[in-house]
Length: 205
Length: 427
Image 1 (cartoon, each protein chain N blue to C red):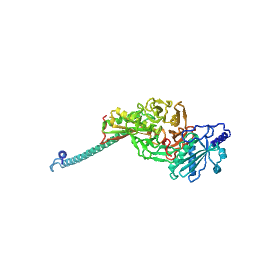
Image 2 (cartoon, one colour):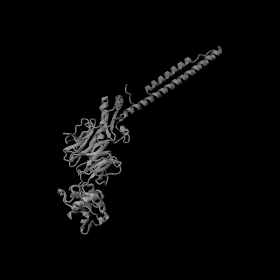
Image 3 (cartoon, each protein chain N blue to C red):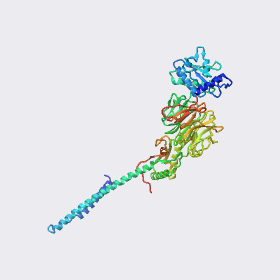
Image 4 (cartoon, each protein chain N blue to C red):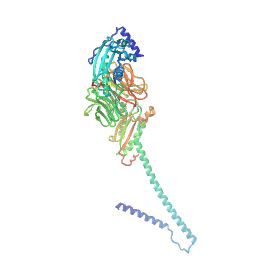
């Protein structure tokens, strides 16, 4: 048994003792049988009721505490998931362009905050294009899109060495089809998160 | 219909032999002075070939000459086939009536093939040659020998060597393939995954290509193992050999645009050629003398075709700068005679093939049917292989840049990124 466990046990024992003390105070004093029987019965009933009420209150408090612990864990899980989703959220581009749109910049701002709060994380950024144009130029365009994303995040304070860039051109479409709806889904930068050893720290507001 | 008008014209010319085209003797092979109208193609009859492989030999030969687009093959009906050649020799009267300028006869021999060419106008045997060929059972090598004969025959008849004995390298289903120029003999090349932009070494036996997972430039002897000459972060795209075969020029970039680099074959220090200042510079194609390079650059805001000296200096815009919203010109291929650059340009929402003259900058549109990409010149500087979806799927097609005649080269699963080989040696 380690010393810390001993201390913990002592604390637990002490608090039990305290609890006993409290209860003893509520315990009714013994009363002479010859005294007012009705009054005595009343006092006894009151004391029992008080005891029951106390026990009920204790169990409700315990249940509340447990529920609260569960809620915190759930909310943590949700935050973790949300942060992971933000990190992997795609950034979309206009046709034959590598400039960030406003929605892309907003997405990258939230990514940057999480990256700043979690310095062990690295990002692999992959640029993609729609099927129009040549395979060769599209590979170059995808690389430029990945580079634009990296440059923006560096501008937000994320260190350069935490990001790699590559391009898959038009070879890995996210949506099939030869219409603008599919093309828009395919003109994108994707993010793979590496170095997630434990829970993500929430960015400071 | 076209054939009969050619016949008619040829018949007229034979009747009135005022227009006679005397052609120069070429340095390679024997040249036959055929009589035909300069504006038409000489009519040629391929005489029936006896023997086991006779029919296929005559068929391959006829198709090769036809695909060359410099000769009008005159088909024989069964009656004519029986009487076109008799014990005494060619049936001159019949051949003249069919409008043939020449008749070709191939006879299989113990060691190969015996070729005789008859000049119909002079009623003389114009050429006799023997070709070595492997046994018919070795189909691939035997076909190559027949293609070689067809190419020499085309040179004898027209002054220009044929392209039957060449191959086209392309990408299909994540691997490289080769197909003979007549569409036969499709063969996978190596097992490389995700290959892009293959190109031939001038020796016709070595190829280079890029892969994007991992990102690298690979050089590989056909039948040998691939070896990376450049790899690392970012992209490695569109390698081509320099015309002297000593190095590879490719596009590479990480975080500051994509530029063209000259990389020695031993993988040692590459030198940057283009100065793109953050733009994309890809798809190099050398002039045949190796002094200039055509390439695609986005430096003006959209892809256009430029030329530069082989050291990266003296950059010129080649295509007229079109500032339209959807201007997009790409995939230059410099013709082996140095006169033209073929490329693709977006016209009405689809890509079409065009050529631009190096001297006069004159534009000529070659296609208008479907979407057409990635032209690559044949060594005759007349035919181009390209990708088209006109048949419903993305297939390789060949077009004669002079007549506009097109034929489908591949069938089956989608194909792309074709590269036409140089003439392949051997006998």
